[in-house]
Image (cartoon, rainbow, N blue to C red; front, top):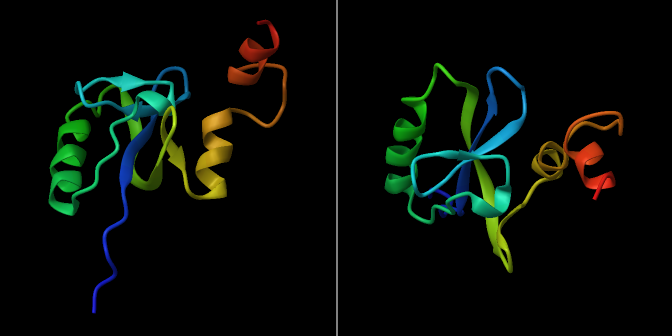
Length: 102
């Protein structure tokens, strides 16, 4: 018996900058997981993945990952995706530096 489908978001990395990005309902990419489209249907997830793959000249490593609804939009389910979402593990650059300058 197949496992039930769990909600997903589409993620990848920006080809030039390397940042983690998420596919939105408006067929664009965002650096914020809260703006990602939360997909709850398996067939729709495959269609949205095909739509995201049309931008293969600007992004790399496109894939579906489990997510759950949150108060501010989708939230990661697995540690790996939480780690990717928060940026590099050192504080000298990336999202974590931007947050420390606020």
